[in-house]
Amino acid sequence: MTTSDDAVLDTNVLVNSLYEDSEHFAPSRALLDRAKERNAGFRLFPQNVAECYAALTNLNPRRVTVPKPPVEALAAVEAFLALPGITLMPVPTTLAQHLLALMRRRPVIGRKVYDLQLVAAMLGSGLRRIYTFNVDDFAPFGELEVLTPPAV
Image (cartoon, rainbow, N blue to C red):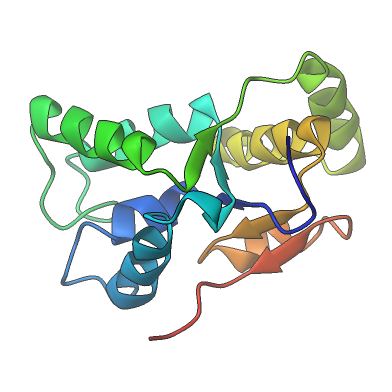
């Protein structure tokens, strides 16, 4: 069951929480520390799992400063999912309908479709809040409350 206080953690929050040299490390880590509490109300989708693993193992220095070997990336993703305050949401059955509607409303190209897919998953699950450092990617969706992890 979701509540109006529940929030999705965007993949960039997960990734930044693992890199102390990231400018977003402290606020990301603070959110993940909150996720140690059962009532934190954080949500992830299978898409976040795949994106996180992809980002952590990416050799492009724009994504991460030091890529992790697959076994370490997998362990990191599993550690996120083991936190009591994070719930892995099922893919909503209305995902494709929401995604197509969003594509008509806001046509995108390339990798930007994954942000639309995450928005579609949120809408199909009744979630309206997301923590992200990519505020501009989600700002066009007035039905969402786009939150930047607070500075620590």
